[in-house]
Length: 145
Image (tube, rainbow, N blue to C red):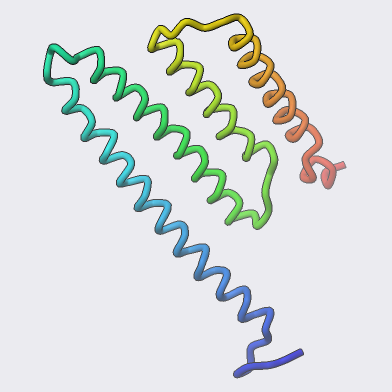
């Protein structure tokens, strides 16, 4: 083992990792604050009454996008705390993203073909099954047995 000023390489790596993770968490917080500010700022699109429906549509899209990013960042922070990826927590942003897309399509009154709706249903169902199986067969539940 190589020592550098009474610190091993592994300890130096752990310290560096903590600094990097803390920096990323600060960056995530700043990004969320800016995203929230942008979402709140988009309220100005509601004020021209002739474009109320368009402005409202943009606000709904911004809020749903912000929720997806929020869930994704929460998964990153959970990874930083546990130092490993948890499949069930990584599935949440994907499920929310798919539901966001479906809501936006339904809200904008686009014509949906049956194949698209069946595709969305199959995707949400399969992601739900994967998430459920990841919770049931997680390593934590294996350790408790």
